[in-house]
Amino acid sequence: MAVKQRLGGFRVMQCILFVICLLAEGRVRVFAILDPLDFLALQSIRKGLDDMSGSNFFASWDFTSDPCNFAGVYCDSDKVIALNLGDPRAGSPGLTGRIDPAIGKLYALAEFTVVPGRIIGSLPSSISQLKELRFLAVSRNFISGEIPATLGQLRNLKTLDLSYNLFTGEIPRAVGTLPELSNVILCHNHLSGSIAPFLSQTLTRVDLKHNDFSGSVAPYSFPPSIQYLSLSWNRFSGPIDGLLNRLDQLNYLDLSMNQLTGTIPGRVFNFPITNLQLQRNSFSGPVQPADQVKIPTVDLSYNRLSGQISPMFSTVQNLYLNNNRFTGQVPDSFVDRLLASSIQILYLQHNFLTGIEINPTADIPLSSLLCLQYNCMVPPVQTPCPLKVGKQKVRPAAQCVGWRG
Image 1 (cartoon, helix red, strand yellow):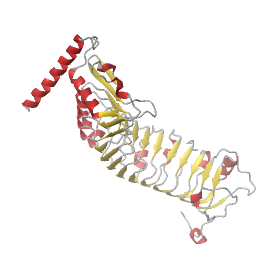
Image 2 (cartoon, one colour):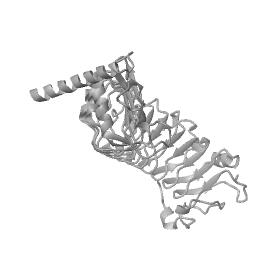
Image 3 (tube, helix red, strand yellow):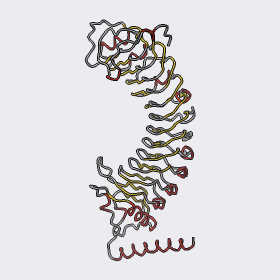
Image 4 (cartoon, one colour):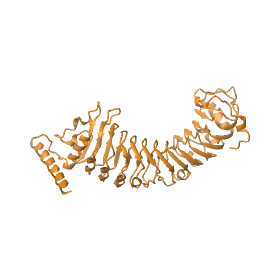
């Protein structure tokens, strides 16, 4: 250990002497001298990474000049406070290589980002040494391994974006205890396990879609401050009404492609959102909004919902109720709004509906799509349906006799 300390001190002294020599030669501007530890850390980070073909991000990283003038390096006095690796312009080639653990030596770093590229390896656990870090975004690369549990030491962290990588394992419980978190974006990875509660009362965005999470979502998994919640394309199960009844600030909700059960609470239809996505779960029971639904797009398809269709849905522009167990007549208000072009998509196929009051000669607007196929009635109007609906127009009579939903 003593040898390592002496070697480390020797490297720092070498760096100081190197900068002094450069100053003497007039090759470094005199207004600021970067902290030697930061200088060495940037050198190590540079050695671990390269430009992909077509990128020239590192062209300005000439260590005979002031590193605070390097592309993506931002300083305050003699310390690096932000490091944005790679050309941020859309479509620009990214970087390749690995993130060197020396990143943890930039003790004043408040922001660390990496543009999309082909960076591999694990996320260095040394990042936990960056006590001032508030923004961590290393997305759209090929970083693998588990999310370091030591990230729970970043008590000032507000944004954690590790999306579109190859992370595995669970979200460390310590991450959920971070008090300042506002954004957690971990979508498109291979994360698994259950979700530990997020305790930050300032948390507004959680995006966990396209992973392999499982288990139930407890009522207190997320704080009431949540505005954006996406849990789609996982294996979550059990009821969700306990959580949804606690959230009143949502402006985006996507719970599709899971195994969620139970009823859908009527209050979700009052959320100020534009797209409610609850499709492809196992929700059951009747759906009864308290007021007219003002959400433009509502997708409840491929569930086990039953009972009659509420006329409160007639104000929805794009309504997907197909592949459920709805029964009874389609409310007249749907027909009126459909013929007035107020409804653009009305998919009611694959239910147990018994009728709809519409004139067979009615002129359905070209801008509107209506599908009634495979119900307990002969569709009074012939309209084009999606190809995957199949060719059968009506359910077999045996399936419709005595159906109570």
